[in-house]
Amino acid sequence: PALLVGLTGGIGSGKTTVAGHFGELGVPLIDTDLIAHALTGPKGAAMPAILEAFGAGVIAEDGRLDRAAMRELAFSDPSSRKRLEAILHPMIREETWRQIAVAADHPYAIVVVPLLVESGAWQTWLDRVLVVDCPVEVQLERVMKRNGLPRAQVEAIVAVQIPRERRLAAADEVVDNAGEPSTLPQRIGPIHQRFLELAALRCAA
Ligand code: ATP
Image (cartoon, rainbow, N blue to C red; front, side):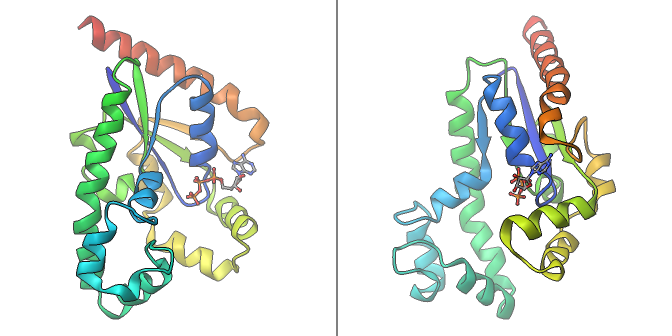
């Protein structure tokens, strides 16, 4: 693609929902969360290395990563989170680039990276940052409802993510997703046009 767009947003902001609308417009979507899940699923390519690093205690019966067990381990031994990332991140990166290459014929592609701004290094490989935004209170309500979680637990997740203002400060484009889902396409259309124009400019250059 001539243009690579990173799509990010806080938990429950609507990244998946917004990405789906771009997908309907024919834009290739590369979802790093899906990639991470596939790598750590049953027979996932990362599982042998995870078994070797952390032992069978973090592997569920069906062979997938036992996320609860891994969280507990990371809690008691903070270095284990770093070691897990050292295994996963290069594999996620490799699969992301493989999928980007598959989308080569499209003017632009969207890479969904939930913790994009937290990761800090997006400027080196993405052309634009698209932030899906809504007030924290709306995020809390959506995630409480979707996951059946108590408010305090969702608040704790939001608290470890980058603050809304800092995420917005990193944005080139923002999709406001505080309103009705039915009004999303009319906000996404102009952004799609803008990305197509930017991609065309790059091709002409
Ligand atoms: P996560 O970070 O947890 O993966 P996400 O950012 O991908 O979440 P979605 O899964 O798209 O967010 O949306 C979170 C929840 O809010 C879902 O249940 C979704 O159906 C709902 N939702 C998304 N957009 C809206 C909207 N505009 N109005 C009401 N509900 C919405």
